Amino acid sequence: QVRLVEAGGGLVRPGGSLTLSCAASGNMFSSNAMAWYRQAPGKQREWVATIFRSNITAYDDSVKGRFTISRDNTKKTAYLQMNSLKPEDTAVYYCNRLGTNDWGQGTQVTVSS
Image 1: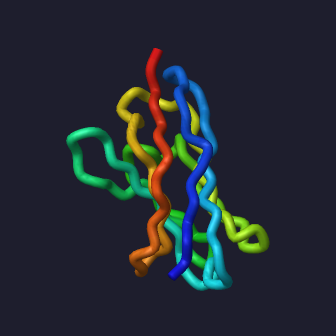
Image 2: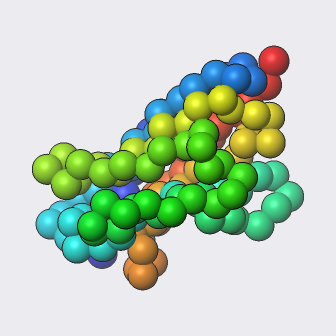
């Protein structure tokens, strides 16, 4: 099992930016695609973005053009750059090693004026 640790959440005003990171332990990081999910209060966890081993990316329509997922295999870290944040982006953000049950503990993102 790979341990994942998210960081970078916080409180930001609408239109602002944040960059989340997801650091992995062990040597399996580069073997899988990585994904970001989020869960807003009272809602189910939803998929946000995926980056495959080939560095091909995919995004939910709600974040396309505003969020960018990336990865650095040498640092065993995945990132989620979030721009033009909206109040509806408020959620706990989780990273996941795709195809596994490896999840981080989550990092809170709050978008509010």
